Length: 158
Image 1 (cartoon, rainbow, N blue to C red):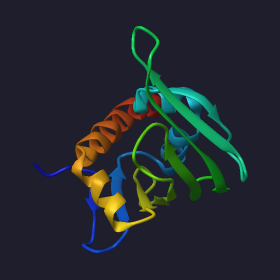
Image 2 (cartoon, rainbow, N blue to C red):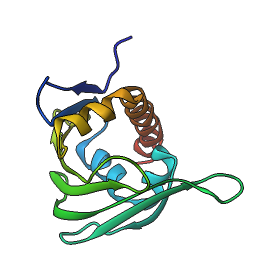
Image 3 (cartoon, helix red, strand yellow):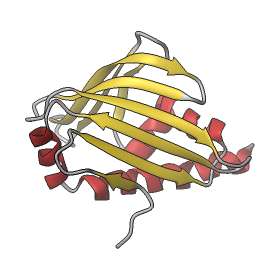
């Protein structure tokens, strides 16, 4: 099955390149990454903090019905240029992965379409390869599909 979100991993390199074209205007694609209520909906996680600014920070968390933490991730935002770029760290708590550095670049293709490129750098090739053993490509595709569908509703409300 070919996914709309492409995950590219070159053997021997400690990075991933993730790309996806969306049928969304650039402003809405960016908004979907910086507005807590929208992020919560497409990522399916609680947004505890999301400071859209240089030197800001973010924290996401998912709990089960009993209140147990299933997933918690956080990081620091190093660059924040609206509708263009976010550079941030990404760290999953209680996971065997080290901190990652993510470069999110937003690009307008047409008035109604845009592209997201995520360049993720891992501490080592081994850590990157461990991430790829998980259903990572499937998961990011599901999330991006939810983003597309959810933000389509916002687009119609414009």
